[in-house]
Length: 243
Image 1: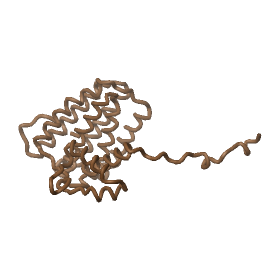
Image 2: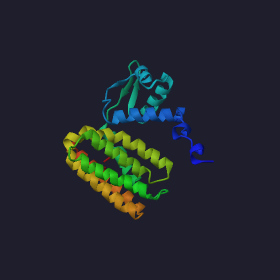
Image 3: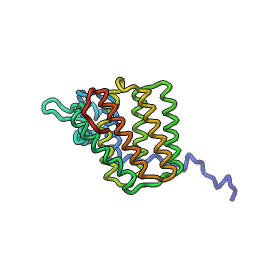
Image 4: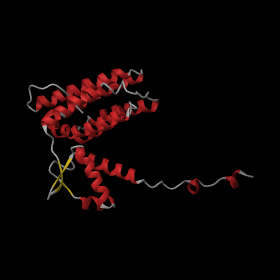
């Protein structure tokens, strides 16, 4: 049998994309809405219409309600009787408590089921550092937060402890939009510089497998960032913690 007669065109053998499961569609819509809230596409006080969201994502209103209920449980929206679902604002007192908890959880990343990094994992962090160098040439608030989000996902992937990952993610997105709101006061270049330093330190520790150091690095940068935020917010008697 010749090669020509045995070969089958690639296009003919390629399987069509697998349809998303109901759970995958839920997670996709949840992440899209969460990102919009954190990037201030939905500003505090905005009304989220179940009907409009259902039309946008071409689904029924039932899964939309489930997504909004999850966002409400995480403090990002609030259901108001007779009004509907409203995007919440951030309470400074609650923010301090969230940051204090994040400081303690940061140390656990390197202690609970740490996952060794592959060459590809490390390359992704290097790519984020290169992206940071590019973004800082033309600083943009949304670009900074997007970069910060992507690095956060790399960090959470370093632990195999699923409850820790879920709690860390929930707390992170509760405070993410605060940084975006305060960025004009904080200074973009200063934040890019501090963030790049954190990524470099984490990369150096990951390259030698020093997972415990990564937790301490993360904790230190969370603390410094929070102190900068409180300083610019006019708070003086604070201790705590950034993104």
